[in-house]
Length: 349
Ligand SMILES: [Zn+2]
Ligand SMILES: [Zn+2]
Image (spheres, rainbow, N blue to C red):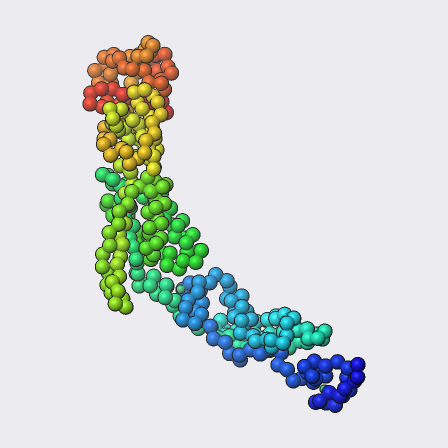
């Protein structure tokens, strides 16, 4: 191969890049550049980053975020395929970060380091979601109630825990509207105001699987935006009628409820057998007593399929069918409830 002179410096060389000798090529190309100042807008409340007109949720540290932003702003000459960018940040003011950037590139076998400088200026604003949140915005309300009774504290806390879990999980997976605006404790239950209707719906579906609750929804017109009606949805979430410890009459059987969910399970107090039924089939059942109403009495004797117990008021001996869970032979203390003047023996414990 014939040696030629470089058209810029006249040096004789056998190796050309883009028609120039190496030195002239490197002198005449811009390997990388970066704007002198980069502006970034971050939500003061949640750390979300504004990209264009949109807010993007963010959970990386501010330094990491700024480094990523610098990397995105560095323009590398497309002729260079092999390069690495490193950044050193210094900051004397939490709103101003100076970045020293080094681009290590490999051009035609020659390692070249290019140094650049930039300054990132951070502006704090409040993102759309945080301003809605602060303004008490809500799309839906879930009313925690119970069918034909008031839910107790404990039940309401269980439902609230489930709601907190769903809201946190959805928020962490990127739904910024997954927040609780307000929680209101009322005599008849708890009202939970939510930023997102889809989260409210998810809460109701989970509650129906987990607690056997049913729900209905209604909407009210909350206003108009961009020519469209804005509705707020109210979900009436109703926990099952019966709770553990309730004694119910269902198709002529007396049942002690032990679990209430999508299915209700318990114990048949006449036979001692396990009871399981779909909760929505218990519409005609009635609560007739409560394990809390049980009183102690004496099991006098056991004879085959029957037992004699002492009536707690009259002290007379009463003969009753022997439930499967009675294993004593007489003389033991047992618990009974009085349902419409007939005695029912409860399981021990
Ligand atoms: Zn040259
Ligand atoms: Zn925010």
